Image: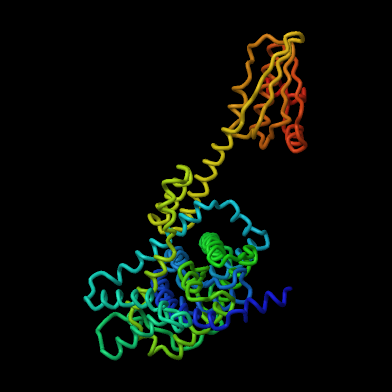
Length: 497
């Protein structure tokens, strides 16, 4: 079984993976350079990182067909560290980032993705689509008309080429777009911005580099906050991207293995003079849309990237940015969940609020972690509020025995505990009160406290209280934290000493 799945990951889609890997490698180059510039480091730092991270995650990552490399979300977190302490401290922070991510993988923090609702994922995807599009705008402002014609032509090739019989299905249209526009630029000699204008490409292979920083507690104090932030944002983006690729390919992935894979990849990047990175939703979508499905596509992307920037840099430098802008606009259009706009009319207000809040916060702050945090927080609050409404009570009075029976249904926790107490009539003159909890469940100490308060209030009014029907889990938490049947604890609650 393991041998079959490994063979499928690597050899199940050779032609599609190789061609998709070529497209991704071409699209990675300007992004890696741009992210290096954002972080304030030499372009080769981002390019070496992209090569290393892609190759390592191809072998040990948890999601076949997903592309990991240097990213803008990570680059933004590095700016202050690079400005204040320089590249060597960034390399040290990258190593520590990888180590933290490996620990997170072994702690199985990948399973925390189960707390991220569908509306948060949709908001995350839409925000990224908007950010990807916005990132292309500088290439489309204050430029000559040639750029607009080339970009429009590139989009025409991308969307129309697949309709050509036979060949349209074999060769990815983004690859045809890049090659066609590059050839046109070189033949006609159009004066247009190219990859070479973004920064100098490296001309040597990466070498092993141990960060030249003092191994002291002061160094750890400097890099740890950055490393922790990089680790969290990197894993968040990687796990969200893995979820999206799972949906696109209708397959599953190992999120905890992905945590560890990203960690080892970042350690490798740091040792080869690269910056920390993570999964890239844009490149992953390009890969999937171009036919990439297996680990081979990720490996090809990383290896071809290095070959092109080191050995074919004169040719790569001629690629017009308009061609790559066309590809990224295609990615943003393909990434955006257009159904989410139609669904606004039919989905609940709480779902729409979570989705829109996630989009607004991510686009406003350019920080994926903030958006997801806000989305998860809002989703949790809405869920708690909704569940609390399903808690209700029925009561019945037996006049012969002067006994009032309260039967509770639903979940009793911090948000429904006040409602739980409101169902009791503490001023009613009865001899005995029966609280039937056979259809209810106690979740936390707030719920237990509300039960204690109910019992204490009834006893103050002279009624005997009997609690029945607790399930095993509820009984355990009530026995452990409840005080109504513990005289010594009850005395403290009532003000005794």
